[in-house]
Structure formats: C-alpha cells, structure tokens
Image (cartoon, rainbow, N blue to C red):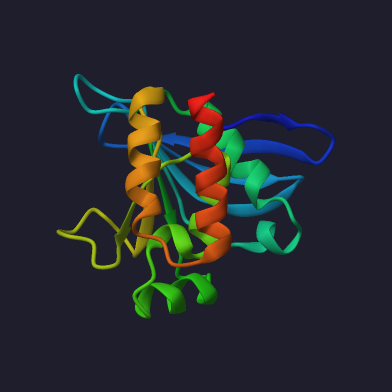
Length: 177
C-alpha cells in the first residue's frame, strides 16, 4: 500500500491493511508523520479496469503546507490512467466552491491535485448506487503526455480562478518545449 518518505517532510505509512470481498480491493488506514489522515481503499486493477485509490480525506495536510507533496506521492504511486478519489465532506471551502458552480480544479483540493500532476476531474457530489460512498473528487492521471496536454487545454477553458488558469498555462507551455 502507501509507504514511503517525501524529502524530510513526509513519512507515509499504511496500517491495518485488510482484504475485502473483491480480491483486488484492499482497505487500510493512512498515517502521515504518525498522524491519522484517513481510511483508504486501493483497487489494483483487473483487465481493462485501471487501478484506483480512494481516501476519506481530512485536509489538515493543507493547513500544514503538505497537501501538494502527499498528492504528488499518490500521483507517482498510480500507473498511467490511474484514478484518485478524494472525499471532501471535511473540506468546507471545497464544498462551498463546488456548490457555487466552480470547476473541481478551481477548488483548493482540486488545485492541489493539479499541482500534483492530475489533469482530469469529476465531482461525485451524488454518488450513484450503494457502493460509491460519500461525495468526492475524482482526479485521473493521464495515460501519456499527449492526453495530458489535451486534458489541460480542455481544463483551461473550464476554470475560473486566475491563479489556476496561470498554473495550467505554465504546464502547457512546459509540455510544448
């Protein structure tokens, strides 16, 4: 599961790893520097179903300036095409912006996910069926550089915040060089 160090600032641990009724799905608890971050689910993939990770996220990492680094760790953990689901019920600023009609990438949570490398977003504000759980953002890792550039260009036309637009424009410019 998730385990490793990011520089001198983050030590990531998975504890209480358990199997589920789906052989490719595990549940576990994520700790950062010894502090509980949230319960997680990791699906290792099957056939054309790509791997994904979901975390019932508490945004205390953002307040400590560590959120971007943790999400970058997750980005590098996932393979191309991998999906990352992050709940936002404990994140009132993100919830408020989504209710106001902002693109998921415009929210504090979404912007951190962009900075980590993710390029495609969906707000699962009303999860379908019974297994999807609570509202969450989905962030996808592009399959390749061509898809990454296409998704960033599409995203550029959707975001409202100027700082987010500028960041995306800089990433696109770097990708062209």
